[in-house]
Length: 110
Length: 123
Image (cartoon, rainbow over all chains, first blue to last red; front, top):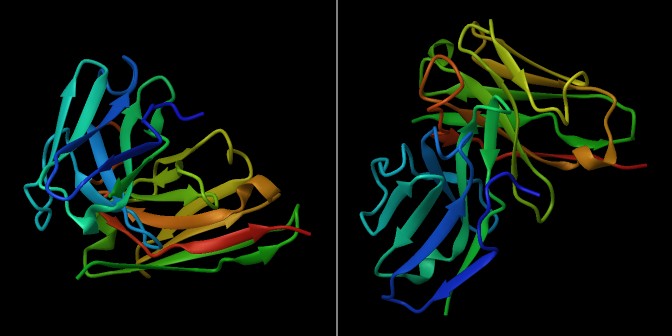
């Protein structure tokens, strides 16, 4: 059971906008920044969003992140077939004094 | 170009030991904290261990505390993970991960990942 809660799956058609939620608590998302990682099939994870809503260079602006209270969201607009991947949220947990991940959301582009 | 290359994975019997290495290049290794993150087959990511840039601070998840030791040799640009008393539940791909700060903790995120090395614990 992951400390951060994500839906196991999400889907959309090309061009659509999809959102993936990440729910936590006051000790993690409520008091620390949220980061998102994308894991393409058979590959290592890659940083997608850091510090709630910042994109590393090279990440398209179709990807955006937000945080409110103890929840966060990743939005993908203009969905493309190459966005089909697993997406993980992560944050520091002050009670555990360690990093925590969500269980991951498998995004399918129909 | 930042590169993190793990090695040392393989098949080991329960109760056995293994040492993973991560060779870093393309950045000033001694200036950044490093982590190990693992992923069991078909499962999600698990934060396992971390070490500060100078090796003075370390962190272990409860699942590996007392059995695994993280260390680094900044003169060789290499991160290590000594794994002992291995269990079946330690079977996973182990990723070497870089943090863009001198220490781990609140605010940390992983800006570069290695390709991973598979550790299989089985008799």
